[in-house]
Image (cartoon, rainbow, N blue to C red; front, side, top):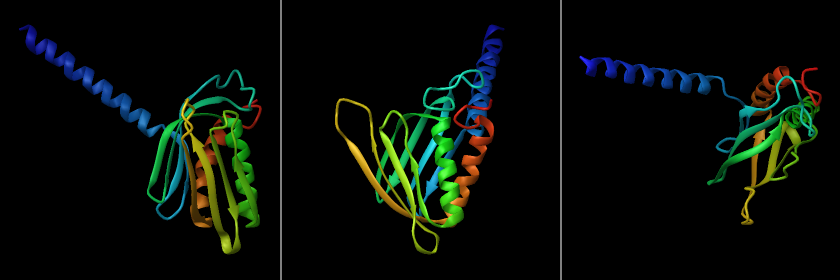
Amino acid sequence: MKAPFIGAFVVFGYLILLVNLFTNFIAMEGFTLKGDANYLKIELVEVYGFPESTSHSGGYDTKSVVEIYSDGFKASSIVWISTGEIFEFYNSLKQANQLLLGTAYLYHLEGNLECNATYGNDGHVSIRGIFSKQSMLDNQLKFHFESDQSYIQSTLTELEVIVNKYGGMKGIK
């Protein structure tokens, strides 16, 4: 009589685990800079202090996952970036996209990810950067890929969701 009872608890436990995984997957916040077959993606895993306390680097600190794929090379790691730094990137990318001119910079205090998106002729965008995992080794991925205005519009939409939720350099206050 105990076996079916225990089995029901195990099945119920697995269902709760699947629901939590599915909810976390659906609720993932982030953005992607895309080219034809290349990308830089940042997904926010945890946001610290929201909405009460902001970071010294602006907005709220996040533990995020960065994934870069460029011309057959791939890197994936944790990056600590603030929503304020994402806000600054959003504003500069939005302005460059409107003018079809200029460069948007994605910097963060930790310094292991640098990226810029530079507008050229006819809405083409050159995305360049360097990523290094913070460790004792000096490994780096230098990446460069081309994009265009159609891909950037999608990126701006994803960034706008983050900015609308977390605000600017002072958070949502």
